[in-house]
Image (cartoon, rainbow, N blue to C red; front, side, top):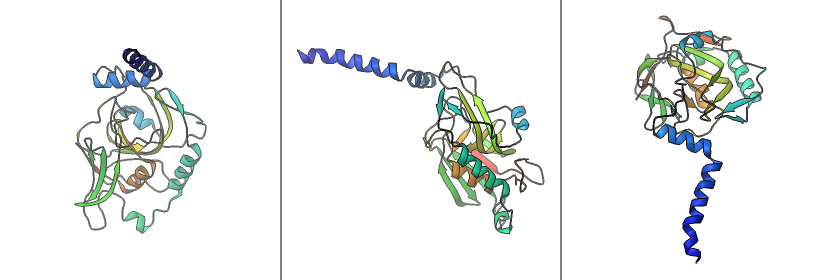
Length: 241
């Protein structure tokens, strides 16, 4: 008799799972079927990027990711920000900044979307490597780019409340914009690196993003919060494939 109830029990279990995970299932199906309807394709447009001043927002108290209020490490982010602003740009630090190293070898960044990994090179020598989370709701653009703008901190708002993908994230750290509003940046709202999680940007572990930010061009002046690439202060090449 009990074996006849197994299909019914399984059906009840499936319905219960879907009910408790409705938004997650809805997001996953929408992504797989390419019908997400989420209008966000990057964290910002170019106009919004240029409005950013890189200042840490001391008044921010909460962060939202996928419609959920999440743990927001304001204290540790503020400390890291203060350290970056007051760092001394000495000869040892200067040797690893910019688009070439001390030996004149080009510094460049490779992002593998298939592997979900970022690698930074000086010539052919690998110097930095870490897992990333690229675009899930919108694709991370492929091609060869150069970092054109950097901000030490900024807010990012987007997604869809109806789909459960809304986010309102203050003080996103170490932003390196390589194509329009698409950036490599630190992410404190998840720890699922190695899997797509973003709206097109390249989410990175906090410590790794901070290391890359200091290594990559354009060089940000000591005590400053933003920098735009110029002919005299060019941005590091970024290859996304």
